Amino acid sequence: MRNFGALLTNEWLKLYKKKSFFVYFAVMAAFIGVCAYIAYRGWMDGVDSALGFTEQIVTMSTAGQILPLVAIIAIANVVPQEFRMGTIKLLLIRAQSRSKILASKYITTLLFSIALIIATFGMAMLTGLLLYGFGGGAGSWSSIGENVLYLTVYTLVFVTLTFMIGVLTKASGATVGISMFCVMLGGLFTMLLSHYDFIKYVLFPNADLSAYQSGMMPEDMSMTFSAIVIAVYMIIFLFISFATFRKRDIS
Amino acid sequence: MKDNEVVLRLDGVTKQIKGRKLVDGLSFQISKGEIVGLLGPNGAGKTTTIRMIVGLIGMSEGDVHIGGHSIRADFEQAIRHVGAIIENPEFYPYMTGWDNLKQYQRMSEGISEARIHEVAKLVGLQNALDKRVKAYSLGMRQRLGIAQALLHRPSVLILDEPTNGLDPAGIREMRDYMKQIAENEGIAILVSSHLLSEMEQMCSRVVVIQEGKLVTVRSIGGEAKQEQSLVHLSLMVDNPALAIDALKRLNLAGSGGNTTDAGERIAVSLPHEDIPKMIAALTAEGVRLYRVEEQKTTLEDEFLKWTEGNRIA
Image (cartoon, rainbow over all chains, first blue to last red; front, top):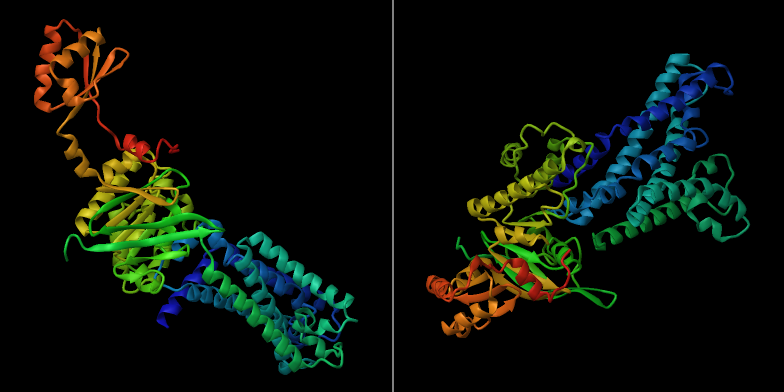
């Protein structure tokens, strides 16, 4: 276990030692800054407290539009960069199994995504406090929690998809491109094909659980159903990633 | 430990892709403290072989044992005895040399930070460890490559084209390191290269492969001794016909067997002790002798013979 911790440390440092590490957080900070300005001018409906502001920021329709994309760009490189720089050759000739190495990479991408979400939440809270002070107004901890949960699920689904594409293509450009394409066209795809029954077994309409909150989901789908679909897709993505990485010839 | 203890053994290693055999039933072994060269024309399967030894590429058939452990069945136990540079040593350019070595230190058990300093000093990088690798020259990267390969005290060192892109001074330095490491620490070294003169100066044995198959295994020191019985000379003379007659009279054609005419040069093979006698005879015959040069068979000549004149580059 100490051993695996060392691998995680390694992977985290590979992300952290890059200058771009802070850029991702800066993008989220800038996004919150813009939202704060909008709220300050009174263009954001019904926001009059720190909790209310935070609740609005962490929804799928605000941070959910940008945070998953930032996370994808940040972690798309985790596997491909080893191939691009050629460091994969030195990485895989250590007394560590390929599965362990890939697992440490995957967990690092999850940790990074969660760190990005926590930082976004923290910055939103802080900004809200600066704008409105504590107490009063609308907004509750429970709905903030709910929003953060939906945001986290959605982000981790696409991060896992990106991770798999990274393992399959070994190219960071293609990985970012394909993943972004999936995020953006997922919604459109769902809309166009909504008449067909099979669409409910596709990942995209299920990934955004906040749709249940607003009552936009068809009646024959439920939160549990979506959770199961998401879990099945995640397991498939991970299975493909690990099976490919373990068997691949490095030449 | 015995000196002839086998640390690396290949048994019928085969790699087949789409019906084509890139490496075909390759077997050889390397003992402690030996430096062995893996030679072959481009596309002979050197790199594929090396990548199979370290487990980067899977084998279709056969197995590799390192320190008694199978790389296929017991990868983690086998690979911990191996240090390797595969082609150019590549590092995380945005990290310092220290951070890079630290990465590999964390991945192996029981290596102290003192060991990092020790290997850095061995390769002469102790003052450059806090620089980012992107600021390193190719020579410095090669040194860092050696440092990472030696970090976990391997018993086998595997180097794929280690002198690629190095200047002559760098190549010489690399060679000296290799010899020093093999002698002082008893590490077995497998080097692949197509620089034949390099291999000749560095290795005690060469394994020659072509089209994935073993052609020959030669011990370099031993061959030199065999050749001492006969000296191969090239003579530059004004009158080859006269000279050949004179040589025949000395029975040299019989002993050497291949007194041939090549313009104004003639080649002759004879025992070391007979050289003064031959020169005296030629002079007495009135043959003007301009050059007497020893013709050494280089590894390159041998190599071309083994691989039937296939192109090396």
